[in-house]
Length: 450
Image (cartoon, rainbow, N blue to C red; front, side):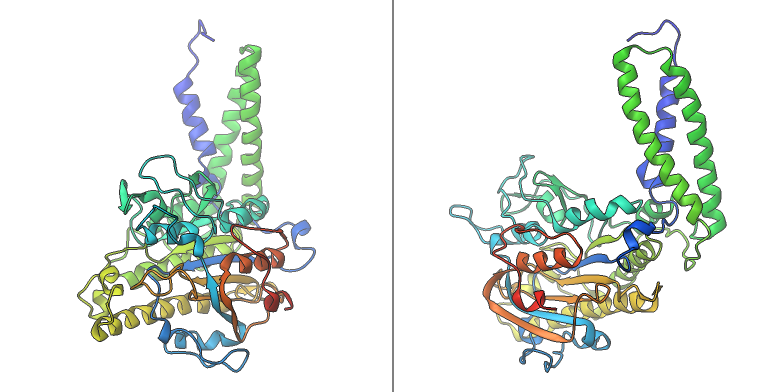
């Protein structure tokens, strides 16, 4: 429709951008859970931490099963959390194996199947195909009560495009998260961008700063609504219908701003907006873990996924005194010196994960802590990185799920038990029971009795 009078469309779009920019408005301040979704107990959070290229399994897997297991060298940093930890053996992601004629590409397939359990289509183009990931499935439901449905975080850059692994699009290697079978969700490795998604363009988590930001956005929203009301009188039926649909989205934003205003006084640990990516892996990972804790503490989201490294990453862990790139080291060909270096990296990763657990344990949440009320999965979609083995994976779970999971055990399942069977159990604990997910064949008997 062409108007004789010029409507300031560009200004109107700027208004839309200012008001509906989800990284700004969804992430300004905390939103408490409603009484409706907490009436059956504390809010439960779900988190995943992924390490690439497998681990040295001899230093990971406990020898004893059940409650009497001893922590292995790689798991030793997790000793303070032994009583709330489940270590799994025998689980597999065999959907990461090559189909007939596909050949190499184990790393891309490992990333794609970790949270989906669906074999990815081998393609270098845009015709991607995998499956919805567990985090996104849960986020769709949990996101009804929070400003953000989920967080997707990474350490390595996610800007790589083209082919990353033997005929597979880099999209498979750049993320673990899939909104649908054809839609990968980008991971964010910039702490500043994550902070702004959570708290807008405020300089810190200070309550007064957040409230000022909210009030400014409220003013923008009110002004926009006045302009839209005037515009409605000048539109034809088709455009009026389109604008009405848009207003539904605006009202949702208005609801979120109201939630934000009501919760703006909630005290959070002081954290200034990060200036950039920290210089070391250690600092970068800890900052990303800190942001996850803040997101859970403020109930901005209840689902987070952290990719601590991409498959085939060539990162050099100089802070450990290691001069060789990580991925080539994992193809150690049984060289004792290379194996020793990979063991040190494995231990480094679990120490950083322990840092996250310590922060979760130290953060009060209702009548317990964030760790008490969370389910956190740590592991990889490969076991032996040297041979690209997709079964007997290094997988563990930490957290109480608000009293629904009993830890302190090493559970061994028959070889090639799908990891997605575990995911079915988790969905039960989260109040989202499903009969099947990915390549699942049923729920894990031992865990289902907890």
